[in-house]
Image (cartoon, rainbow, N blue to C red):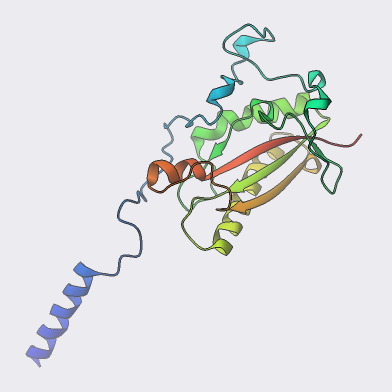
Length: 206
């Protein structure tokens, strides 16, 4: 009996040590989006579009959001969607920031709150604008799982903005799952840039 018990415990210890590790070794599952981590800055090319200290002075290097009324419609050739919504400033998206998420999570992290609040304030000042919120994931997991996760991420952003006073009727969500990565490759430095929600400003039909 004691030999059987020893064999059982030895086997259990071997399995515990060896294990079956299905997660890539280079994955950081602790806290990929720490609260104090700055936004990776996808919009660096457009300057800091949220620095209101720049006012409306186009010569101020700190920049500011564009006035949708000043956009040249001829430069926005993209067609309307099924609801008649037309993309506004498709190249720069009015400088709106990307909202990032932690690994395998649809929970908004505190480090993204300031950007979410600025999006909400801007939409309230421009009630003719709608917002399509795209949900995206990194390259791991099945297509079906990531599609659902992307939708939950987009809905988390939508719910937050609605609580801040943005009419729910002026927002829509869509999920791309892992189909449209912002950065190609693998590894945590790449994955964390692809776990995101992308706000796309739209002109709603009057």
